[in-house]
Figure (cartoon, rainbow, N blue to C red):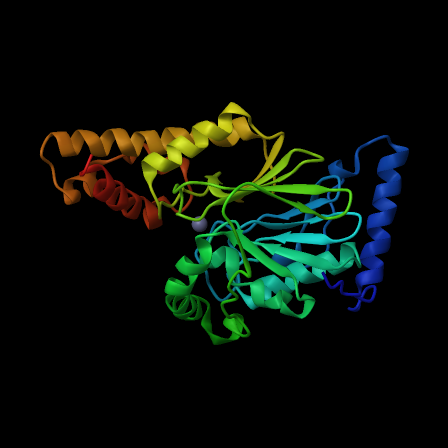
Length: 330
Ligand SMILES: [Zn+2]
């Protein structure tokens, strides 16, 4: 496989940030703190902030907002993992702009080649930054079902993103389809560091992929976990509960949720997720059993969850609608 040589610090300001990072790492060493405890901020723009959450693993907290011209579609978590020989990027944000900020953050942290761009699933806020990485000629990796799903929806995603954020913030954004689909658990080697990719059955979508760094047991779980931001259902609510319960049998040390803090423990994320999904399932089943309609469900299912989630009004009714369509055929 061809290796790309990328010059060190190809953009202005990189050296300063790199030096700052080294200094912080040294300080952490002197104080006997793990470097992961030192928060590293790479750039001034919100979409440029990455935090070292574990040894060689960086993650970014996307905003709990809908896409707009101010946030450039920077509304989902993204990150990257540095091995001895190469780098894997995981999710790229909602525009060419967010992808570029991510690429700059990688380049500020290391000159190693970006060999993999992995998408956790097809949603636009996770894949529309892919085009920023085409100069690196990486392998674009995803769940085997993502290519077809994204190809079918890509035009609509692009139109909606452009409409939401405007011409200026949208500039350069295009669909980059995966070059490789993962059908069964697969290992990628970054040099002295292996990533295990596990495709999941239909849950949040029909193409959810979990990426686990074997060295630190840190898992990028994509939108299988939302924290703070209301979960959004685009697959199967029953399947989603099942996948979460299965992951809970061997929970990762640390996770990067698709929406929520840059990193968190599994238990703190799992409880609220399961409570929300179970509440929707239980309420919708009851309404169906009583002969209620989809409109009854939209009006009355799960209102107690409202104060617990950001963007509840934007997504809850859609979740109930999707759950009703699934559960009425049980
Ligand atoms: Zn999603």
